[in-house]
Length: 563
Image 1: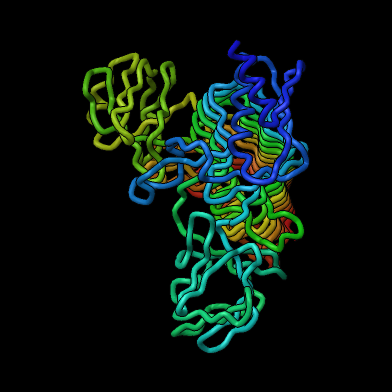
Image 2 (image 1 turned 135 degrees about the vertical axis):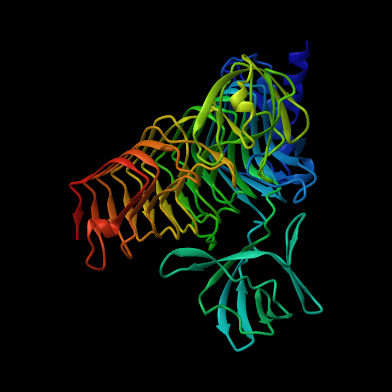
Protein backbone atom coordinates (compact mmCIF):
# COMPACT_ATOMS: atom_id res chain seq x y z
CA UNK A 1 0.00 0.00 0.00
CA UNK A 2 2.78 2.40 0.99
CA UNK A 3 4.67 1.69 -2.25
CA UNK A 4 1.52 2.28 -4.34
CA UNK A 5 0.89 5.63 -2.70
CA UNK A 6 4.52 6.68 -3.27
CA UNK A 7 4.38 5.74 -6.99
CA UNK A 8 1.10 7.65 -7.38
CA UNK A 9 2.73 10.70 -5.80
CA UNK A 10 5.71 10.40 -8.16
CA UNK A 11 3.41 10.33 -11.19
CA UNK A 12 1.64 13.44 -9.98
CA UNK A 13 4.88 15.45 -9.70
CA UNK A 14 6.42 14.30 -12.98
CA UNK A 15 8.52 11.27 -11.99
CA UNK A 16 7.83 8.14 -14.06
CA UNK A 17 8.46 4.63 -12.72
CA UNK A 18 8.20 1.53 -14.91
CA UNK A 19 8.48 -2.22 -14.46
CA UNK A 20 12.17 -2.28 -15.49
CA UNK A 21 13.19 -0.40 -12.35
CA UNK A 22 13.82 2.79 -14.30
CA UNK A 23 12.83 6.07 -12.68
CA UNK A 24 12.60 8.94 -15.15
CA UNK A 25 12.76 12.53 -13.98
CA UNK A 26 11.58 15.05 -16.56
CA UNK A 27 13.19 18.50 -16.46
CA UNK A 28 11.22 21.59 -15.53
CA UNK A 29 12.03 25.25 -15.20
CA UNK A 30 12.82 26.31 -11.69
CA UNK A 31 14.08 24.40 -8.68
CA UNK A 32 14.42 20.63 -9.24
CA UNK A 33 16.14 19.79 -5.94
CA UNK A 34 13.21 18.20 -4.14
CA UNK A 35 11.96 16.36 -7.21
CA UNK A 36 15.36 14.75 -7.73
CA UNK A 37 15.54 13.80 -4.05
CA UNK A 38 12.08 12.23 -4.31
CA UNK A 39 13.37 10.04 -7.16
CA UNK A 40 16.34 8.98 -5.04
CA UNK A 41 14.03 8.05 -2.17
CA UNK A 42 11.79 6.10 -4.58
CA UNK A 43 14.82 3.97 -5.53
CA UNK A 44 14.97 2.85 -1.90
CA UNK A 45 11.61 1.10 -2.28
CA UNK A 46 13.15 -1.53 -4.57
CA UNK A 47 15.06 -2.98 -1.60
CA UNK A 48 18.42 -3.30 -3.29
CA UNK A 49 17.26 -4.33 -6.78
CA UNK A 50 19.09 -2.53 -9.59
CA UNK A 51 17.49 0.85 -10.27
CA UNK A 52 18.39 3.49 -12.86
CA UNK A 53 17.33 7.10 -12.34
CA UNK A 54 17.28 8.55 -15.86
CA UNK A 55 17.36 12.25 -16.62
CA UNK A 56 17.32 14.14 -19.92
CA UNK A 57 19.71 16.36 -21.83
CA UNK A 58 18.53 19.50 -20.08
CA UNK A 59 19.28 21.74 -17.09
CA UNK A 60 18.29 20.59 -13.60
CA UNK A 61 18.58 23.45 -11.11
CA UNK A 62 19.72 22.67 -7.56
CA UNK A 63 19.02 25.38 -4.98
CA UNK A 64 20.67 25.73 -1.61
CA UNK A 65 17.47 26.68 0.23
CA UNK A 66 15.67 23.47 -0.79
CA UNK A 67 18.66 21.12 -0.42
CA UNK A 68 19.08 18.34 2.14
CA UNK A 69 20.80 20.05 5.04
CA UNK A 70 22.87 17.52 6.99
CA UNK A 71 25.93 17.87 9.22
CA UNK A 72 28.97 16.15 7.68
CA UNK A 73 32.60 16.49 8.69
CA UNK A 74 34.78 16.19 5.62
CA UNK A 75 38.52 15.55 5.60
CA UNK A 76 40.83 18.40 4.56
CA UNK A 77 38.12 21.04 4.51
CA UNK A 78 37.62 23.55 7.34
CA UNK A 79 38.33 23.77 11.05
CA UNK A 80 35.86 24.52 13.83
CA UNK A 81 37.11 28.11 13.89
CA UNK A 82 36.98 28.55 10.12
CA UNK A 83 33.49 27.03 9.85
CA UNK A 84 31.65 26.50 13.16
CA UNK A 85 28.57 25.12 11.38
CA UNK A 86 29.49 21.97 9.43
CA UNK A 87 26.03 21.64 7.87
CA UNK A 88 26.27 20.70 4.21
CA UNK A 89 23.65 21.82 1.71
CA UNK A 90 23.33 18.71 -0.43
CA UNK A 91 21.81 18.56 -3.89
CA UNK A 92 21.70 14.77 -4.34
CA UNK A 93 21.72 12.85 -1.04
CA UNK A 94 22.18 9.10 -1.32
CA UNK A 95 22.27 7.29 2.02
CA UNK A 96 21.90 3.59 2.72
CA UNK A 97 21.21 2.66 -0.90
CA UNK A 98 22.37 -0.28 -3.04
CA UNK A 99 22.55 -0.85 -6.78
CA UNK A 100 21.46 2.62 -7.91
CA UNK A 101 22.61 4.42 -11.05
CA UNK A 102 21.95 8.08 -11.80
CA UNK A 103 22.24 8.39 -15.58
CA UNK A 104 22.16 12.03 -16.62
CA UNK A 105 22.03 11.30 -20.36
CA UNK A 106 23.66 14.71 -20.90
CA UNK A 107 21.90 16.57 -18.08
CA UNK A 108 23.43 19.64 -16.42
CA UNK A 109 23.11 20.10 -12.67
CA UNK A 110 23.28 23.85 -12.07
CA UNK A 111 23.82 24.81 -8.44
CA UNK A 112 22.53 28.08 -6.98
CA UNK A 113 24.39 29.19 -3.86
CA UNK A 114 27.22 27.36 -2.11
CA UNK A 115 26.33 23.68 -2.15
CA UNK A 116 27.62 20.15 -1.84
CA UNK A 117 26.43 18.68 -5.13
CA UNK A 118 26.16 15.09 -3.92
CA UNK A 119 26.77 12.84 -0.91
CA UNK A 120 27.04 9.04 -1.10
CA UNK A 121 26.88 7.74 2.47
CA UNK A 122 26.70 4.08 3.58
CA UNK A 123 25.93 2.94 0.06
CA UNK A 124 27.02 0.07 -2.19
CA UNK A 125 27.20 -0.28 -5.97
CA UNK A 126 26.38 3.31 -6.91
CA UNK A 127 27.13 4.80 -10.34
CA UNK A 128 26.90 8.44 -11.40
CA UNK A 129 27.29 8.97 -15.13
CA UNK A 130 26.81 11.23 -18.12
CA UNK A 131 26.07 14.62 -16.62
CA UNK A 132 27.66 17.99 -15.94
CA UNK A 133 27.95 19.80 -12.63
CA UNK A 134 28.28 23.57 -12.84
CA UNK A 135 27.22 26.69 -10.93
CA UNK A 136 25.07 29.68 -11.76
CA UNK A 137 27.25 31.75 -9.42
CA UNK A 138 30.76 30.20 -9.19
CA UNK A 139 32.44 31.06 -5.89
CA UNK A 140 35.65 31.71 -7.81
CA UNK A 141 34.76 34.84 -9.80
CA UNK A 142 37.09 35.98 -12.59
CA UNK A 143 38.21 39.21 -14.20
CA UNK A 144 40.62 40.16 -16.98
CA UNK A 145 43.01 43.12 -16.76
CA UNK A 146 42.75 45.42 -19.80
CA UNK A 147 44.91 48.37 -18.67
CA UNK A 148 47.45 49.04 -15.91
CA UNK A 149 48.56 52.44 -14.60
CA UNK A 150 50.73 53.65 -11.75
CA UNK A 151 47.94 53.32 -9.18
CA UNK A 152 45.04 51.76 -11.06
CA UNK A 153 43.98 49.05 -13.41
CA UNK A 154 40.97 48.63 -15.65
CA UNK A 155 39.31 45.24 -15.51
CA UNK A 156 36.66 43.36 -17.43
CA UNK A 157 34.47 41.25 -15.12
CA UNK A 158 33.49 37.84 -16.45
CA UNK A 159 29.76 37.90 -17.40
CA UNK A 160 29.00 35.03 -15.02
CA UNK A 161 30.57 36.86 -12.07
CA UNK A 162 28.00 39.15 -10.50
CA UNK A 163 29.13 42.17 -8.47
CA UNK A 164 28.04 45.34 -6.70
CA UNK A 165 29.66 48.77 -6.45
CA UNK A 166 28.41 51.12 -3.75
CA UNK A 167 30.19 54.31 -2.71
CA UNK A 168 33.36 53.00 -4.29
CA UNK A 169 33.20 49.68 -2.42
CA UNK A 170 33.33 46.62 -4.63
CA UNK A 171 32.14 43.05 -3.90
CA UNK A 172 31.40 39.95 -5.90
CA UNK A 173 28.01 38.46 -5.01
CA UNK A 174 26.29 35.09 -5.34
CA UNK A 175 23.00 33.59 -4.22
CA UNK A 176 24.08 33.40 -0.57
CA UNK A 177 27.64 34.76 -0.51
CA UNK A 178 29.75 37.85 -1.06
CA UNK A 179 33.47 38.29 -1.70
CA UNK A 180 35.29 41.58 -1.15
CA UNK A 181 38.62 40.22 0.09
CA UNK A 182 40.39 36.91 -0.23
CA UNK A 183 43.15 35.21 -2.20
CA UNK A 184 43.83 34.89 -5.92
CA UNK A 185 45.48 33.05 -8.75
CA UNK A 186 46.66 34.48 -12.03
CA UNK A 187 46.17 32.83 -15.40
CA UNK A 188 48.41 33.42 -18.41
CA UNK A 189 46.55 32.51 -21.59
CA UNK A 190 49.66 32.40 -23.77
CA UNK A 191 51.50 29.92 -21.53
CA UNK A 192 48.29 28.24 -20.31
CA UNK A 193 49.46 28.28 -16.70
CA UNK A 194 48.10 29.47 -13.36
CA UNK A 195 49.99 30.43 -10.23
CA UNK A 196 49.14 31.76 -6.79
CA UNK A 197 49.55 35.50 -6.94
CA UNK A 198 48.76 38.96 -5.68
CA UNK A 199 45.02 39.52 -5.29
CA UNK A 200 43.22 42.60 -6.68
CA UNK A 201 40.77 42.75 -3.77
CA UNK A 202 42.51 43.25 -0.37
CA UNK A 203 44.30 46.50 -1.32
CA UNK A 204 41.49 47.95 -3.42
CA UNK A 205 40.82 51.55 -2.34
CA UNK A 206 38.05 52.47 -4.74
CA UNK A 207 36.11 50.95 -7.62
CA UNK A 208 34.51 52.96 -10.42
CA UNK A 209 32.08 51.38 -12.87
CA UNK A 210 32.86 52.69 -16.37
CA UNK A 211 30.17 50.56 -18.00
CA UNK A 212 28.53 47.23 -17.11
CA UNK A 213 31.29 44.69 -16.35
CA UNK A 214 34.06 47.23 -17.07
CA UNK A 215 35.54 48.84 -13.95
CA UNK A 216 38.53 50.87 -12.84
CA UNK A 217 40.20 49.74 -9.63
CA UNK A 218 42.14 52.40 -7.72
CA UNK A 219 45.04 51.52 -5.37
CA UNK A 220 47.54 53.32 -3.16
CA UNK A 221 50.39 51.37 -4.75
CA UNK A 222 51.08 50.01 -8.24
CA UNK A 223 48.93 46.92 -8.91
CA UNK A 224 50.89 43.73 -9.48
CA UNK A 225 49.36 42.92 -12.83
CA UNK A 226 49.75 43.37 -16.56
CA UNK A 227 47.21 43.62 -19.39
CA UNK A 228 45.80 40.26 -20.36
CA UNK A 229 46.18 38.66 -16.93
CA UNK A 230 43.11 36.79 -15.69
CA UNK A 231 42.59 36.83 -11.93
CA UNK A 232 40.64 34.04 -10.23
CA UNK A 233 39.55 35.04 -6.69
CA UNK A 234 38.12 33.22 -3.70
CA UNK A 235 37.98 33.12 0.07
CA UNK A 236 39.95 30.47 1.94
CA UNK A 237 37.15 28.66 3.78
CA UNK A 238 36.17 25.21 2.48
CA UNK A 239 32.70 25.08 4.00
CA UNK A 240 31.13 22.88 1.30
CA UNK A 241 32.46 20.23 -1.08
CA UNK A 242 31.56 19.16 -4.58
CA UNK A 243 30.91 15.64 -3.37
CA UNK A 244 31.44 13.27 -0.46
CA UNK A 245 31.74 9.47 -0.58
CA UNK A 246 31.98 7.84 2.85
CA UNK A 247 31.42 4.42 4.47
CA UNK A 248 30.50 3.18 1.00
CA UNK A 249 31.68 0.46 -1.39
CA UNK A 250 31.95 0.07 -5.17
CA UNK A 251 31.29 3.64 -6.27
CA UNK A 252 31.80 4.73 -9.89
CA UNK A 253 31.74 8.14 -11.56
CA UNK A 254 31.85 7.78 -15.35
CA UNK A 255 31.56 10.44 -18.02
CA UNK A 256 30.89 13.23 -15.54
CA UNK A 257 31.95 16.79 -16.39
CA UNK A 258 32.84 18.84 -13.30
CA UNK A 259 32.75 22.31 -14.83
CA UNK A 260 32.80 23.96 -11.42
CA UNK A 261 33.29 22.25 -8.08
CA UNK A 262 31.90 24.22 -5.19
CA UNK A 263 33.78 24.78 -3.16
CA UNK A 264 36.15 21.91 -2.21
CA UNK A 265 36.55 18.86 -4.48
CA UNK A 266 35.27 15.28 -4.44
CA UNK A 267 36.26 13.62 -1.18
CA UNK A 268 36.34 9.94 -0.37
CA UNK A 269 36.78 8.97 3.27
CA UNK A 270 36.41 5.52 4.84
CA UNK A 271 35.22 4.17 1.48
CA UNK A 272 36.14 1.09 -0.55
CA UNK A 273 36.67 0.62 -4.30
CA UNK A 274 36.18 3.98 -5.99
CA UNK A 275 36.45 4.38 -9.77
CA UNK A 276 36.69 7.69 -11.62
CA UNK A 277 36.61 7.15 -15.38
CA UNK A 278 36.30 9.56 -18.31
CA UNK A 279 35.84 12.58 -16.06
CA UNK A 280 36.42 16.18 -17.11
CA UNK A 281 37.47 18.72 -14.49
CA UNK A 282 37.45 21.84 -16.67
CA UNK A 283 35.23 24.87 -17.40
CA UNK A 284 32.60 24.32 -20.07
CA UNK A 285 33.68 25.08 -23.62
CA UNK A 286 32.65 28.56 -24.66
CA UNK A 287 32.11 29.74 -21.08
CA UNK A 288 35.17 31.98 -21.10
CA UNK A 289 36.05 30.78 -17.62
CA UNK A 290 39.52 29.49 -16.74
CA UNK A 291 38.94 28.00 -13.26
CA UNK A 292 37.00 24.83 -12.46
CA UNK A 293 37.83 24.30 -8.81
CA UNK A 294 38.01 26.16 -5.50
CA UNK A 295 40.80 23.89 -4.20
CA UNK A 296 41.64 20.20 -4.83
CA UNK A 297 39.72 18.21 -7.42
CA UNK A 298 39.99 14.69 -5.90
CA UNK A 299 40.88 14.04 -2.27
CA UNK A 300 40.90 10.40 -1.11
CA UNK A 301 41.45 10.24 2.65
CA UNK A 302 41.56 6.89 4.45
CA UNK A 303 40.08 4.67 1.75
CA UNK A 304 40.66 0.98 1.00
CA UNK A 305 40.23 -1.52 -1.79
CA UNK A 306 41.22 0.01 -5.13
CA UNK A 307 41.10 3.60 -6.31
CA UNK A 308 41.11 3.89 -10.09
CA UNK A 309 41.40 7.25 -11.86
CA UNK A 310 41.70 6.95 -15.63
CA UNK A 311 41.17 8.70 -18.96
CA UNK A 312 40.27 12.01 -17.35
CA UNK A 313 41.20 15.69 -17.69
CA UNK A 314 42.21 17.90 -14.75
CA UNK A 315 42.42 21.58 -15.71
CA UNK A 316 42.00 24.74 -13.66
CA UNK A 317 42.24 23.84 -9.98
CA UNK A 318 43.33 26.04 -7.08
CA UNK A 319 45.18 23.16 -5.41
CA UNK A 320 46.27 19.59 -6.14
CA UNK A 321 44.16 17.68 -8.69
CA UNK A 322 44.64 14.32 -6.93
CA UNK A 323 45.63 13.70 -3.31
CA UNK A 324 45.44 10.15 -1.91
CA UNK A 325 46.52 9.57 1.69
CA UNK A 326 45.59 8.29 5.13
CA UNK A 327 45.57 10.15 8.44
CA UNK A 328 47.90 9.88 11.41
CA UNK A 329 46.08 10.43 14.71
CA UNK A 330 48.11 11.32 17.79
CA UNK A 331 48.03 9.03 20.83
CA UNK A 332 47.00 11.17 23.79
CA UNK A 333 46.50 8.62 26.58
CA UNK A 334 46.07 5.05 27.79
CA UNK A 335 42.80 4.77 29.77
CA UNK A 336 43.29 1.01 30.19
CA UNK A 337 45.92 -1.59 29.43
CA UNK A 338 44.30 -2.34 26.08
CA UNK A 339 42.93 1.11 25.30
CA UNK A 340 44.32 4.23 23.66
CA UNK A 341 42.88 7.69 23.20
CA UNK A 342 43.73 9.18 19.80
CA UNK A 343 43.16 12.66 18.42
CA UNK A 344 42.81 14.37 15.05
CA UNK A 345 45.62 16.94 14.99
CA UNK A 346 45.33 18.91 11.75
CA UNK A 347 42.81 21.71 12.04
CA UNK A 348 41.02 20.88 8.77
CA UNK A 349 40.41 17.16 9.41
CA UNK A 350 38.21 15.88 12.25
CA UNK A 351 34.74 14.77 13.25
CA UNK A 352 34.27 11.42 11.47
CA UNK A 353 34.91 7.89 12.69
CA UNK A 354 38.09 6.63 11.04
CA UNK A 355 38.34 3.24 12.81
CA UNK A 356 35.97 0.28 12.66
CA UNK A 357 36.02 -3.01 14.60
CA UNK A 358 38.46 -5.43 13.01
CA UNK A 359 40.65 -2.72 11.49
CA UNK A 360 44.39 -3.23 11.80
CA UNK A 361 46.43 -0.30 13.08
CA UNK A 362 50.10 0.42 13.58
CA UNK A 363 51.85 2.60 16.13
CA UNK A 364 54.14 5.01 14.28
CA UNK A 365 57.03 7.14 15.54
CA UNK A 366 56.23 10.65 14.20
CA UNK A 367 59.91 11.59 13.93
CA UNK A 368 61.27 8.51 12.17
CA UNK A 369 57.93 7.48 10.58
CA UNK A 370 58.84 3.90 11.43
CA UNK A 371 56.22 1.35 12.44
CA UNK A 372 56.73 0.22 16.05
CA UNK A 373 53.95 -2.29 16.75
CA UNK A 374 50.67 -3.59 15.27
CA UNK A 375 47.27 -4.08 16.88
CA UNK A 376 43.66 -4.69 15.91
CA UNK A 377 40.63 -2.58 16.84
CA UNK A 378 37.90 -4.31 18.86
CA UNK A 379 35.85 -1.19 19.52
CA UNK A 380 36.01 2.48 18.44
CA UNK A 381 34.08 5.20 20.24
CA UNK A 382 33.95 8.88 19.29
CA UNK A 383 34.40 10.81 22.54
CA UNK A 384 33.99 14.15 20.79
CA UNK A 385 34.67 15.60 17.35
CA UNK A 386 38.42 15.38 17.84
CA UNK A 387 39.00 12.33 20.06
CA UNK A 388 38.39 8.62 19.58
CA UNK A 389 38.74 5.88 22.21
CA UNK A 390 40.10 2.64 20.76
CA UNK A 391 39.83 -0.70 22.52
CA UNK A 392 42.43 -3.07 21.08
CA UNK A 393 42.79 -6.84 20.85
CA UNK A 394 45.90 -6.82 23.07
CA UNK A 395 47.55 -4.91 25.85
CA UNK A 396 49.82 -2.09 24.77
CA UNK A 397 53.48 -3.02 25.46
CA UNK A 398 55.21 -0.97 28.13
CA UNK A 399 57.93 0.20 25.75
CA UNK A 400 55.22 1.71 23.51
CA UNK A 401 53.47 3.40 26.42
CA UNK A 402 56.70 5.08 27.48
CA UNK A 403 57.15 6.92 24.14
CA UNK A 404 56.18 10.57 24.58
CA UNK A 405 55.12 11.23 20.98
CA UNK A 406 53.25 8.57 19.06
CA UNK A 407 50.69 8.37 16.26
CA UNK A 408 48.58 5.58 14.80
CA UNK A 409 47.59 4.76 11.24
CA UNK A 410 44.62 2.67 10.14
CA UNK A 411 46.42 0.10 7.98
CA UNK A 412 43.21 -1.55 6.79
CA UNK A 413 42.05 1.68 5.15
CA UNK A 414 45.01 2.05 2.80
CA UNK A 415 44.16 1.62 -0.90
CA UNK A 416 45.71 0.17 -4.01
CA UNK A 417 45.92 2.97 -6.61
CA UNK A 418 45.80 3.05 -10.41
CA UNK A 419 46.15 6.44 -12.13
CA UNK A 420 46.51 6.23 -15.91
CA UNK A 421 45.73 8.01 -19.13
CA UNK A 422 45.01 11.41 -17.58
CA UNK A 423 45.91 14.98 -18.55
CA UNK A 424 46.88 17.64 -15.98
CA UNK A 425 47.27 21.34 -16.78
CA UNK A 426 46.64 24.86 -15.45
CA UNK A 427 47.58 23.72 -11.93
CA UNK A 428 49.41 25.99 -9.42
CA UNK A 429 50.64 23.12 -7.24
CA UNK A 430 51.42 19.42 -7.73
CA UNK A 431 49.70 17.04 -10.11
CA UNK A 432 49.43 13.91 -7.94
CA UNK A 433 50.08 13.32 -4.25
CA UNK A 434 49.94 9.69 -3.22
CA UNK A 435 50.93 8.05 0.07
CA UNK A 436 49.81 4.46 0.59
CA UNK A 437 51.56 1.19 1.40
CA UNK A 438 49.65 -0.80 -1.19
CA UNK A 439 50.43 -1.12 -4.89
CA UNK A 440 50.51 2.16 -6.85
CA UNK A 441 50.71 2.39 -10.64
CA UNK A 442 50.93 5.81 -12.31
CA UNK A 443 51.21 5.42 -16.07
CA UNK A 444 50.51 7.10 -19.42
CA UNK A 445 49.66 10.51 -17.95
CA UNK A 446 50.63 13.96 -19.20
CA UNK A 447 51.60 16.70 -16.74
CA UNK A 448 51.70 20.09 -18.45
CA UNK A 449 53.48 22.92 -16.64
CA UNK A 450 52.62 22.11 -13.03
CA UNK A 451 54.01 25.02 -11.02
CA UNK A 452 55.35 22.53 -8.47
CA UNK A 453 56.21 18.84 -8.73
CA UNK A 454 54.30 16.62 -11.10
CA UNK A 455 54.22 13.83 -8.49
CA UNK A 456 54.85 14.03 -4.73
CA UNK A 457 55.21 11.03 -2.41
CA UNK A 458 55.40 12.39 1.13
CA UNK A 459 54.21 10.94 4.51
CA UNK A 460 54.17 13.04 7.65
CA UNK A 461 53.00 12.92 11.24
CA UNK A 462 53.75 16.45 12.43
CA UNK A 463 52.34 18.89 9.83
CA UNK A 464 49.39 17.74 7.69
CA UNK A 465 49.40 14.34 9.47
CA UNK A 466 48.82 12.69 6.09
CA UNK A 467 50.01 9.07 6.08
CA UNK A 468 51.61 6.85 4.97
CA UNK A 469 54.60 4.85 3.80
CA UNK A 470 55.07 3.61 0.21
CA UNK A 471 55.84 -0.06 -0.39
CA UNK A 472 55.25 -0.65 -4.12
CA UNK A 473 55.13 2.31 -6.53
CA UNK A 474 55.63 2.26 -10.30
CA UNK A 475 55.75 5.51 -12.29
CA UNK A 476 56.09 4.71 -15.99
CA UNK A 477 55.38 5.98 -19.51
CA UNK A 478 54.38 9.47 -18.35
CA UNK A 479 55.09 12.77 -20.07
CA UNK A 480 56.25 15.63 -17.82
CA UNK A 481 56.27 18.92 -19.74
CA UNK A 482 58.00 21.91 -18.09
CA UNK A 483 56.86 21.15 -14.54
CA UNK A 484 58.32 22.76 -11.44
CA UNK A 485 61.16 20.96 -9.77
CA UNK A 486 61.83 18.41 -8.60
CA UNK A 487 59.44 16.99 -11.18
CA UNK A 488 59.13 13.81 -9.09
CA UNK A 489 59.64 14.47 -5.39
CA UNK A 490 59.88 11.70 -2.79
CA UNK A 491 60.04 13.57 0.52
CA UNK A 492 58.85 11.91 3.72
CA UNK A 493 58.91 14.38 6.61
CA UNK A 494 61.06 12.37 9.02
CA UNK A 495 63.65 14.26 11.04
CA UNK A 496 65.31 11.12 12.44
CA UNK A 497 66.90 8.58 10.17
CA UNK A 498 66.15 5.26 11.86
CA UNK A 499 65.20 3.28 8.77
CA UNK A 500 63.80 3.70 5.29
CA UNK A 501 60.33 5.25 5.20
CA UNK A 502 59.57 4.19 1.61
CA UNK A 503 60.44 1.04 -0.33
CA UNK A 504 60.35 -0.30 -3.88
CA UNK A 505 59.78 2.78 -6.04
CA UNK A 506 60.40 2.43 -9.78
CA UNK A 507 60.55 5.41 -12.17
CA UNK A 508 60.91 4.06 -15.68
CA UNK A 509 60.46 5.00 -19.34
CA UNK A 510 59.13 8.51 -18.63
CA UNK A 511 59.78 11.61 -20.71
CA UNK A 512 60.94 14.70 -18.82
CA UNK A 513 60.93 17.98 -20.76
CA UNK A 514 62.69 20.19 -18.25
CA UNK A 515 63.08 23.92 -17.72
CA UNK A 516 66.18 23.29 -15.60
CA UNK A 517 67.93 20.23 -14.24
CA UNK A 518 65.78 19.34 -11.21
CA UNK A 519 64.14 16.11 -12.35
CA UNK A 520 64.00 13.62 -9.46
CA UNK A 521 64.68 14.03 -5.75
CA UNK A 522 64.33 11.09 -3.37
CA UNK A 523 64.83 10.72 0.35
CA UNK A 524 64.66 7.62 2.58
CA UNK A 525 63.90 4.97 -0.04
CA UNK A 526 65.07 1.36 0.06
CA UNK A 527 64.92 -0.03 -3.47
CA UNK A 528 64.81 2.94 -5.85
CA UNK A 529 64.99 2.31 -9.59
CA UNK A 530 65.29 5.18 -12.07
CA UNK A 531 65.75 3.53 -15.45
CA UNK A 532 65.27 4.12 -19.18
CA UNK A 533 63.91 7.67 -18.87
CA UNK A 534 64.44 10.49 -21.35
CA UNK A 535 65.56 13.84 -19.89
CA UNK A 536 65.37 16.83 -22.26
CA UNK A 537 67.16 19.72 -20.55
CA UNK A 538 67.96 23.24 -21.81
CA UNK A 539 71.52 23.09 -20.54
CA UNK A 540 74.23 20.48 -20.41
CA UNK A 541 73.52 18.20 -17.46
CA UNK A 542 74.72 14.95 -16.00
CA UNK A 543 72.74 12.25 -14.28
CA UNK A 544 74.04 13.61 -10.97
CA UNK A 545 72.55 17.01 -11.83
CA UNK A 546 69.18 15.54 -12.73
CA UNK A 547 68.72 12.97 -9.98
CA UNK A 548 69.37 13.66 -6.29
CA UNK A 549 69.11 11.02 -3.57
CA UNK A 550 69.85 11.01 0.14
CA UNK A 551 69.47 8.45 2.89
CA UNK A 552 68.57 5.86 0.23
CA UNK A 553 69.62 2.23 -0.23
CA UNK A 554 69.78 -0.14 -3.19
CA UNK A 555 69.53 2.63 -5.79
CA UNK A 556 69.63 1.66 -9.46
CA UNK A 557 70.09 4.44 -12.02
CA UNK A 558 70.76 3.19 -15.53
CA UNK A 559 69.65 3.33 -19.16
CA UNK A 560 68.57 6.98 -18.94
CA UNK A 561 69.07 9.30 -21.93
CA UNK A 562 69.94 13.00 -21.60
CA UNK A 563 69.33 15.36 -24.53
